[in-house]
Figure 1 (cartoon, rainbow, N blue to C red):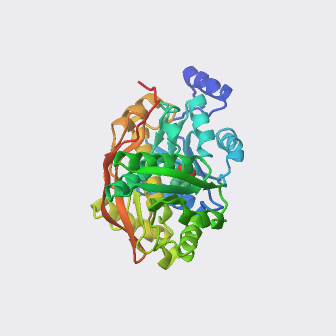
Figure 2 (cartoon, rainbow, N blue to C red):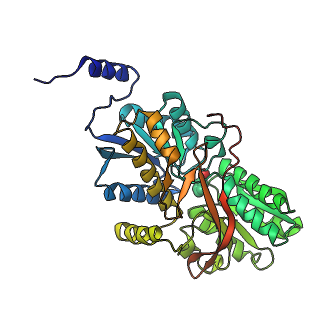
Figure 3 (cartoon, rainbow, N blue to C red):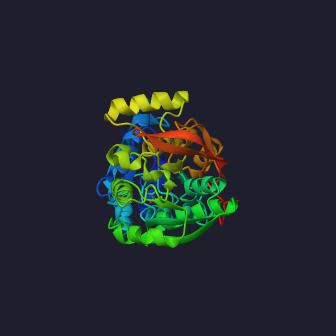
Length: 389
Ligand code: BEZ
């Protein structure tokens, strides 16, 4: 006969009424991976997912004493479909933890669900500033960056080189806009100025009208946020326009991350700022890169690092709650106190649950984003508006 305690029965009934699965010690834990597996950010989503899985495999497929099942959902980087996609994971698939996503617009539906339902959300890429500023919550954590952070580092480096005026070229959505703000803040901190932001809609790639304007703007440098397949085209178009030698192009490191081989000679010499770089000489990175290469046949990049660290952070939370993904308090306490042994170098989280991390200055050389300096040491996002106490 199966004995189910009254408390457990009632707990189960209450959970069902709320449309969420009851926690049963030892039962498999479903984790929803909502990521782009198609479109311009497809390669980013694949690397996040593969590295998340890599860490899970290193843990024998178990976290907090429970076997973990991953449920993958392609969000297509489409904000319009995001609320429905989140609902599918929570209601149809009954996942207990949300991990996602790459795109700063899409992540807002995940943030909303995590806040409203008090579900644990780990953001493994999307840099939307608000998620760890005014929309911060005890159940929301990020293992990547805010859009502000890498771009701030790049602006700071440019200003230190004596650049007085620069423009920002990007897509017209949160990641582009917020990285432009970071770039401007970095420039201003060193006595420079962001004079203009030029945009096109996401994910369009007709860069010619913008490229045609650049020589007439009276600036000394061009900063940029693009990523994935479209960053390949932007960097190639920039070089083909003949601007590369006249008006140095730089940016948040996503501009050349994971796409250098495809960009070829057009990217050679470009400087970018990011919290990761090829050839970072720490033991964790060396082991991680070899394991990722063996698992996927691809070289690791920052997106893989984000995914790996998302699973490391989840493991810390679930170990603390003994596998109860609904026990936000003990999970959050352990995750807040954690020092993550990341391939980027060890990092901890700010009070608003965003990495405090070193932003490296990199230069593209021979197919690698080589680290050539430090753009900003132990950089925290300003975290403005977060009221978690
Ligand atoms: C974003 O939308 O937040 C994003 C997308 C790709 C790379 C970096 C950030």
